[in-house]
Length: 324
Image (cartoon, rainbow, N blue to C red; front, side, top):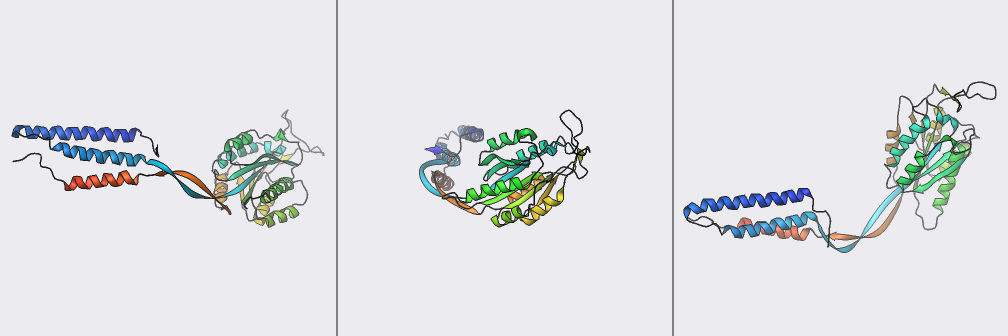
């Protein structure tokens, strides 16, 4: 036999209180009966009756479980791909401490909200790579997110098409897996919006037909900030001008609108990551999987019914302790 709940201090406290109070009640009755030359031994019947009822109530509260029953469990989930920009501009400090570090902190909080969903991580700059495949393992996701740095991949100009195409490849592989039910898919693109790649329209059209929804998170400020080298000097372009990185929200808004998603911002004045979490939670999983699991049957009803019967008998059974 197993127990659904352990015997803890609240139950022990109630048990001790019952014993102490009932002993006090019995002693008081015997003291009142003694001057009249009578004995309160008839109270013992009530003590046995109430003691059994209280013990059975305690057993019912702890949930005695024995025997095994088969129960169907229906689950619905979705796949969430996090696409994180690791280009050099994500080291900009217009969002303290840096754009990337602020996004890392928010992502660590985000993945804790999706325990029933699979989450994967793709990093990109000019090219894209799968940093963590779809998984339920939140500890692994935390590890990969905490180790993100802009020097993890080859430096280059940001290409937003690269992570979207890689995510599409992974979505097709998931849908073609033998015996795998279809799952709702969501992409979360986290970047400052600067895009130096080719035309995004063909990729967006394929993404729209796939049914996946794209949510975009713009990180940075519209005013922008100068990019610095490792030695602290300003980074300059081929013409010798200082490179200033700015948040470019327009293409991110357009991408989200074309795929049925939403656009959010993470700036020095605004943090819309909580709104992003709420939007992702509203995306329902399309695939339902039914599994049969073996669970111990909680038989609390039997001791509870017997305890109630004893309490009813206690009310109906009248014992005169002190006779005139």
